[in-house]
Amino acid sequence: MVTQLLFGETVKIYEEKKGDWRKIKTAFDDYDCWVDKKQITEISIEEFEHINVHSKVLSAELIHVIQNKTTEEYIPIVLGSFLPNYKNNNITFNKSEYVFDGLTFDGLKKNTKNKLIENAYIYLNAPYLWGGRSPLGIDCSGFTQILYKLNGVQLPRDASQQAKVGQTLSFVEESEAGDLAFFDNDEGNIIHVGMVLDNNKIIHASGKVRIDKLDHQGIYNIETNQYSHRLRLIKKII
Image (spheres, rainbow, N blue to C red):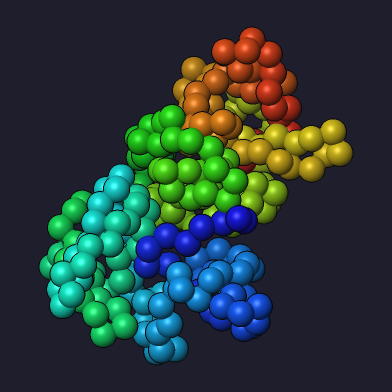
């Protein structure tokens, strides 16, 4: 698994082969991958374009359910899911209407960095999952991408791609809570990302979403008493 689609996110289908598999590109972050056709609902081009322009309301609930008004079936959705055509606790797509009675974020509103920190703590101790983007399993770049998505900022999917965004800072001391720190391997490739916190700390997904110490060398794991990741650069996104 290379990534996950959250409820309400849209894709374009580019290829159909291998039985039920479809090659797709995600609309949110232009990511190429394959998906089983049973896990997506095909909609018209007109609805696709309307949703991507006008549907920017996000679920602010860690885990919630929506109910199909016709079949009365429930669908579980997670924090950061888009709510297509949301209005008056209702969402609609593909000629179906669902009830959502939870809290929402305005995906077009850019909040302060304090909101980034507040949302990051919601994911604390969520298990690590390669390709994951949900509180039930998330990887390092999925974690930072979702945090900024909840804050009205669109980031690429992978850590190496995210490292190309924003303003590069020269020293750890110049960073502030909400900035992103990137880490490389022996070959110099960016392989990890986390979000800077106050007091020389960082929150990142490594085994689980956790908080460790951060200095000019990298991430110092407070449980193993050794460095786990080598610092490459820090970026100010907002």
